Image (cartoon, rainbow, N blue to C red; front, side, top):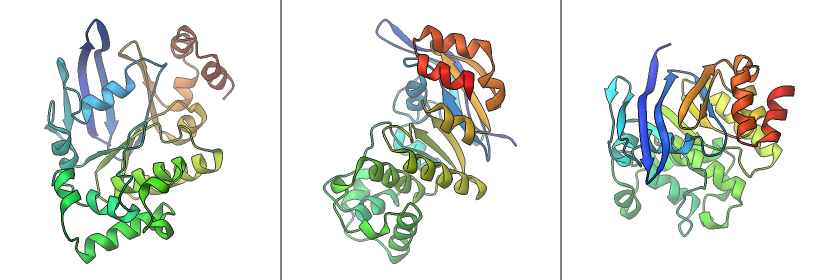
Length: 258
């Protein structure tokens, strides 16, 4: 497999806080790659740099061989890089299916997609197909704001999928949802990966990451610390030290006895 998404030497500071310090990341085409690390290690900042929400002070981001460093979020999305957020971002006052129809406009700005007066039958069919895939088709006509938190997670996943991105970045897909839904989300990701989708996943749930991902990269203090297969990362003493230093005893316990 070859690299579909790559970040090299990324640095970024906010005031006196250096969030990223020469961080690098390699996501192979067709893989499920996990990105983990203690709180404050820079994971979400790296996501934001890759997807254009934050500009790096140094380093490069490439997608499918093209330099996309500093590109605006809508341009990155249009190229085929989709993402979800740690806190779901949906349009709560419009219906579930209308949220999906906004997302079909990958090459338009979200505002233009939101204000379009009409969507085609092809777009509507695609929207309903992905809602059915995540189990929300029966709720298509309801206001998106009426969904539970777990259902909003699924809607945001479907929202990304309907735009047909080549790589999907998921920011804590298992966060704040129950075990049944965590397992369901994991199965959806596996199914999509088998169909050719590439994933990069930030997650604190170690069991979810270790059971799902092909490769795991660990960040610590803004740098990439270790990268390898889950079993290699789990047993690496540098990883345990990084989490111990961050005071995350629960994660250390999961890593040690996983």
